[in-house]
Length: 228
Image 1 (spheres, rainbow, N blue to C red):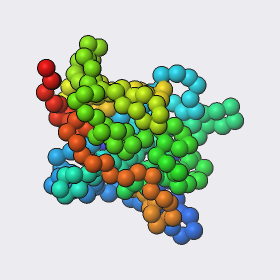
Image 2 (spheres, rainbow, N blue to C red):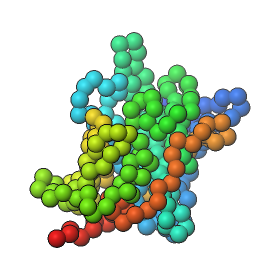
Image 3 (cartoon, helix red, strand yellow):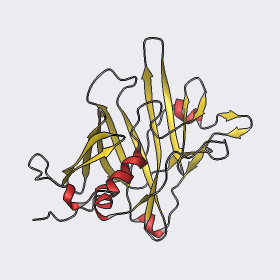
């Protein structure tokens, strides 16, 4: 894995200084908590594209850092993303920051808001919900895999069928579902923007996922041996 840094624009960076009622909604850069368990987990770079049109925003890149409990039993991802919302009335840049399970978004008009859940209202990938679903996979969920170079699994999320494939085992997985295609690669830890969601009165939208072997292998690139 090579070092990778989020490439957020001036718009997104400026929003980190936005204030509301004296509360700093977005904070400065801060490294992920470096527990020994966390150090063994890579960050994720997620290229988000759409299977069908129309969507209110262009394709974009999402960055995620894992925070793992000391005993390695649970993981929660901090997430940064920036995307452009386009409709018939306007277009604007949006900044999305999830920290410690609290998610906030801001736009190029300096408006910031607490998110009601990970993906609302912009149909973003719900990274921690996906992580929880992957942790629930079992060997019995693996089909023949003729159309996938590595292991392939199916799971349900928000009443929608999803597929995850090791498109480049140990280096990349692809997740499809809910009209989104997520191409996930692994990276060294990134310095992500952090929000003040808890102090701003936001409610948590994500919670740590219990770590299980298949989910961990997919999220870290530590491929499991193929079963006979």
